[in-house]
Amino acid sequence: MSYELSPTQQALSDQVRDFADTVVAPAAYEYDTKRSLPYGIIAQMGEMGLFGLPFPTEYGGQGSDYFSLCLAVEQLARVDQSIAVTLEAGVGLGIMPVYRRGTEEQKQRWVPLLASGTALSAFGLTEADAGSDAAGTKTTAELTNGEWVINGSKQFITNSGTEITRLVTVTAVTGQSTRTDGSIKKELTAILVPTPAPGFTVLPAYDKVGWHTSDTHPLLFDDVRVPEANLLGERGRGFANFVQTLDEGRIAFAALCTGAAQGCLDESVRYARSRNVFGRAIGSNQHIAFKLARMQARVHTARLAYYDAALKMINGKPFKMEASIAKMVGSEAAMDNARDATQIFGGYGFLNENPVARHYRDSKVLELGEGTTEVQLMVISRALGFAG
Image (cartoon, rainbow, N blue to C red; front, side):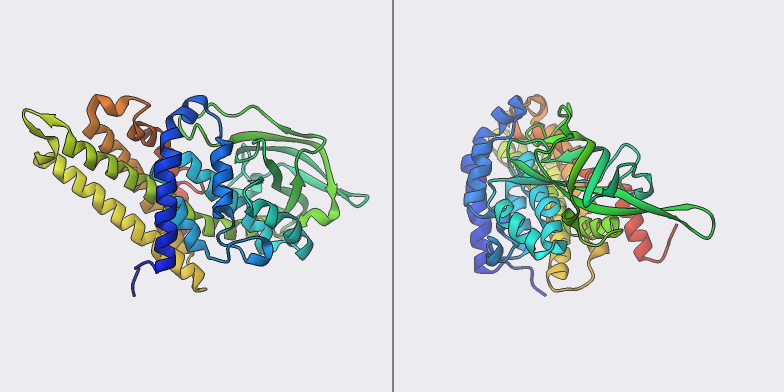
């Protein structure tokens, strides 16, 4: 087995790396300070075809695969996690559910538009009491006179309130039944909500610790009406389908984590070679060199983990456990490398204009988003046969 990139894959990775270094990185501090999404950069990413990488050309895509998306996300995350997650969530959580489970009409309408990068989409799953716990979902959708009438709220929804957001997929309770033990089983269904829409309100953005450039909002649905045909996939299969989407998404998320860990390593190596104390570069001190060695080992391990999960996925093999391993290993690598990088930089690592400071703020959410570390441990332990 070889994880060596093909010439086409290497060319893509190099192209995105150059774009990240010359376009994204120089603007990262400015947009982080403004806490605004750089639409010009997103437009350039669209022109490069990044949002369409894993989709067939007949739907406006690049005809590549999910692994290629991961390579692009990794390179962007080296310099700006917010830009990387805009791509990762825009494709994995926004376009992919429509492509995987949409009707032909839905796919023809939405996938080419979203794959062009001129519009973004979001997936509304999480609520105050729901996310991993699907039974806690309170948002409802009632079918009335050929329309879904949606009421409820969602939180922590990425890409949901941008100037170019045109679609939000919502999971909602569309019915319920009583189990034999007397408990209630909720029927969860995914429904497409084009935006803007009457009754749909994007509430003020969160004041986040990190990911300042990434768009994240709570959402409110007050008698939002959409056609019955906006059902996505089968009625009652909303959460089960989204779990599959999460499994795939965790691989790209792991690539983002790997890129963040690599970015911290790159900055630290450069600084360790150029920063002189007591007449010599700090990298000549063994405790610094050993810290860098551990950072390299984390990056290498994280990259192998997501490569393995991605290759299993695109080859049609089971990958659920591997995706969780990759996400957990990658997020811990990013957080640990950000901590070590900040320590290597000393006081300079505490300045927000320094990339490692942004990685330090940004990386904690990597252990939370798309399933916490504890959720990944649950998935892995279940794969080992421990249901508790």
